Image (spheres, rainbow, N blue to C red):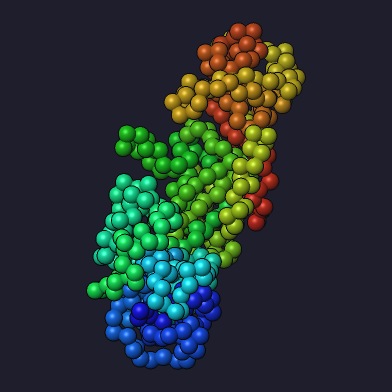
Length: 471
């Protein structure tokens, strides 16, 4: 049977990828003969038919066309890359045709129990050197630039029709690689030969490219942000298709970075979050922004410092510091031990009746108060109903505004403590609360600030001046 040179190489178990890179399409009698031919430079093709084993995929003309289309697609995307890798998706019928070839007794070069190089590997070994020259970059098994190529053949469904009942699939469309392999194992050799031609029939046309896609590994930028506005959400706040806030912390920080990286999207996460009406002061809240599919991935620390300055000069609502590139595995540090961290808050409290010095002294003397907080009513629509124990490690109460109906309360708490609910009690869902501690006195929270978050990450880049935004 006449098959292309690369198919005889792979079915013969030849793993010298250089042979695939230099091989031309040719029929031969033995694997040894083919190996010798493959190592010689080839400029002509002795076979005019489409290979029945690989559906023409591993023949020079098809490979050259595929390489040209990949090059055109990648150049059009304008990525900043220094290497590339390939993901190749092939017609499932190639597995059936390979099985047929292995059962063909007339092929002296083939034995059923021999190790066979997969068509996918052979394609990568053959296409890689072609693309290295076209893209002017090395092919690597692992690279930030992933080129995915989807190859199809019009005969695929017809080749697979007989297999569906043996693969626990109701139709050809539901077949997967695993299902095809299961089906082939379930069919006895003599039964297979009755249902599928051995050797496989030469197709009328070769495989062709259905789709090419490119993606670049995400870039991760960490930092800390301060929020000075009481009308700003952390991420875009959209409810029933309508924006509730004009902008967000994410957009103010990430828009300029995304434009610089030419990324297709952004995923923003932080160590907790503050409510829209709560400010984030002190050294700021740690965050990580993942920039998806960046076309410009190379950014220096100096450039990040410039972008940081541009962000800070563009708004009075948000300030950012310590911008830096990090690796994906470092992002886990943002959430590690989150509930064990301590946070410090300042709150302006109103009391229906005058607050005395003894009241303030009593509150200031409290230490390690354990709260039982049921999920607050205001977040019950998006959080699981649960009672969470939380600790207030210390409190400090001082007069405010020269008015004995107001006082300032500073609290150091376990991360995840609902401060607003601790103050007003949330209809008894938080126990104890400030109202019960003050013997049933009606109190409410007017203003709330986060003063500090006990997370020493990411490491500081520069010592920025922190603005004074006290009450």
